[in-house]
Length: 411
Image (cartoon, rainbow, N blue to C red; front, side, top):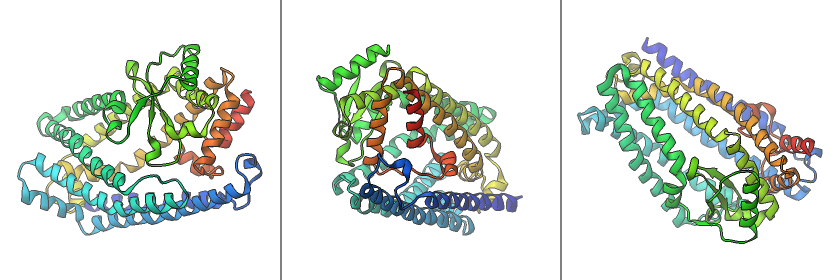
């Protein structure tokens, strides 16, 4: 039986890696160095050539980073790396909770250190080369340290509670753990912009003026109670523009990147926000949260069937069926389920994107939304001709050309 688990895990990791590389290959082959007819009017020849170079550089970078991750996992599996980290943790602590916490801390720190050179290259070489990076060395390292600290502050109590539940509640583990994670997810969804974002970015209320008046006027027209409109200093890290909607109930807020205001007209910004408001009005935000919670429930139930399994722990090189080793083994075995659930979530998400576009179009904003989407795509050098299979498996949004066609019909 240990051999079966080991073979399954290695097979899943290998197939997942090879499948992703095949998809990436198809996606790369679908890109053409010649400006396609359907993107004329969005990209000019010079800007499209720049986009193709950015896309090619990103693919090469992704291949190297993914290959390294694959090799590290395979080496850890074949040379019992997870069991070795477990032994180190047990040489320091005796109780299962601190042993597990140290185990996850060492795995997480190791993963972070391996990924650090790639983050540095991505930020200061790749993004810098194409004019996107605005991050200073100081900001990068502060973000890195804050990220580690935040993982510790949030991860230690949450993981400790989940392991304590496992050690003390037997058959009720999956229900109680799911409840804890569910409550945590809802709270974070409501307060993320208030508690987490300020650690990394400065948010200020949008000043009175033409833009705020236009947003508030549309919100009233759409029957949307909106009191919180914030501007975030996204330009301190990147020139790419963005906007997002967060929170539930009275805690909902709209956040605009300062780069967005520099790229789009007032009416185009209103159209983009109309799309975001459409998600809320159509209850897509709540739907996504419910689907996420249900997915977590399924995961915890199946996890409960694997915890304490000696054969699974043995497949990772250990004789002790600890919570943390079984969780690692389960996480690798669960990859196909995650993959299928991800596809289903993406299908729902893409449909909801069309519905949110239709909501904006119902207020006569289809032209402004189209122009805003075009500008954002060009500004971020987005790939406009991804392979259909790559879109199906990975895109949570329809492609720009698909959205433009739908908006054209709506108009």
